[in-house]
Length: 275
Image (cartoon, rainbow, N blue to C red; front, side, top):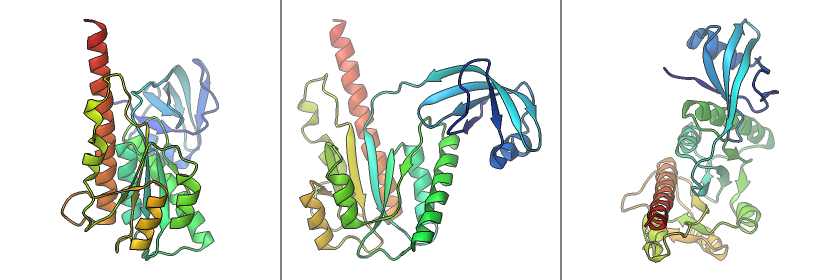
């Protein structure tokens, strides 16, 4: 039987026997009208920080739902890499759709960029409203994919400012910038380069940043600027991908390679310890 999951950033209670109250209209509508849950049904609440709170519904009213906590646990996933995607603002709803997919893949942070060739331009008010919408999209995608932690997304920022703000302070072991129509190596080749020669107990880089440009691509000046901050130019294959497709492909490749390397080394270390 499916256990439905809901994101509540500050549940207000987290010990068995305590009561959690839901007053978010979206949650109430989802539980009562869409899922048609009833008293006695069990749900899971996540707080965005990795905790899973299992609850039993007590009452469902038009303006408030109450549930009692059965148990609370903290997830302990494999230490896969922490991935940041820098992505230019995109026309239409493509950025919104891409954001939801990046949440599903497991990206930890998204930095919306304003590059030289970015078509979308936002006022301060528009940027604030867009950020609120993105946070709502991320929360909904988090519930849908049963992820336990909440993706971080920041206000749209100028390309050079983003490099100064995040690349200087970020201790990322690897930083990439996707440059189409270049002779740069493939992203996966860069991630795997020399990796299989390391000791089995070594842990792959825990932090990776990948920078994706707008529909017209980066200018040569932007690519050169990024390399001064340690970004390695890479490609995603021979075909020219749309920006949203490139972001999804790059994120999936990086997460998959990082998790594969970690599990491979964990398995080798475990088998060697038991020989």
